[in-house]
Image (cartoon, rainbow, N blue to C red; front, side, top):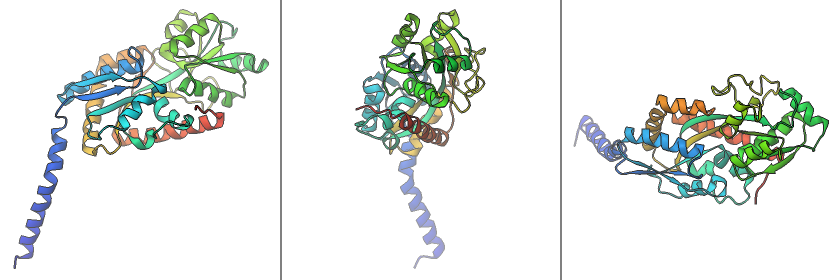
Length: 326
């Protein structure tokens, strides 16, 4: 009969041998090119961030990362595609608050639950919005603007980038936070929203900073406040909503990488490390700051918790505003 010591040694060797293939597989990842799905059209902020991040992460991983644009259904089409992909780390999604945290609440027939079907990998950016008004508004502060809206309830128009988008719900949240009333006009994107403000077809929008940055800087539109916890580098003279007196109004967009649920933890960690290092490139940081955004990276666990908190925040805003899309 084998001694207890010999039996224990044999058992440990057996366990080590069984664990070796999984460990070696994780160490070897990736063995072939990775596809990064962007659920929006080429040329926009999401597409640019995807290409910047993919280039740097590719160098870290030693494999190509191919960016594919799959726009449609408010950014949810690409998310659904990735949710159905094999959970091996070779098909990833670059997405943000709209398709991840908002769509799961406002769409009646989304077809999948991003919170269950997608695994957070790493956050890439943080993006406050900006309260911008047309020249129709005669004042210069948020307090004056709230009084302006309250003086004529329902008279003025709010432009968004589409029903169920972060810009739409940012307006609904402003309505809830200030006790104001105004009409919502959904447009089909950021450029149309900006044009509506310039033409005076809409009175204001709480929109993505890159959509109106040049017009605000040139004085064609009025920037009243930004919506994050701190002032963005591109607009250091504008107060935050909190500084302007709207306490608790913290609306921040973000972009991050997701994998299909069930992707091995070792692979997710490898991807997290590669994309996080890619975003430390000074050129990427400068480009983002010039358009009002900032780099925001961290461990997988931090991003997972952040997404859960984002889901809760936007579920409440959408539910309180009774926003649904068939």
